[in-house]
View 1 (tube, rainbow, N blue to C red):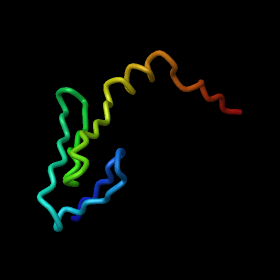
View 2 (cartoon, one colour):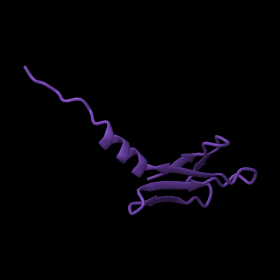
View 3 (cartoon, rainbow, N blue to C red):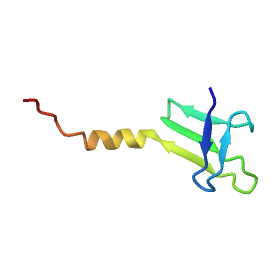
View 4 (cartoon, one colour):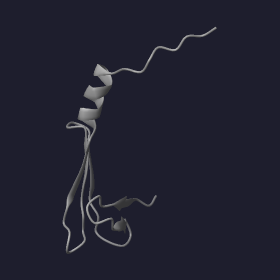
Length: 67
């Protein structure tokens, strides 16, 4: 399996076999994080899933009716 990530700050795409990439999936904190390896960028990309999960509880999907 090959993993590729794109930095949200600079837009560079890094593939697993090209650089020493670290993609952290934290199930306890419900976060996915990646630090850009571009020498000019070094931006920390964070995808916070706990926030998304809280929003889904406050605005659930509408009920589906069958006929």
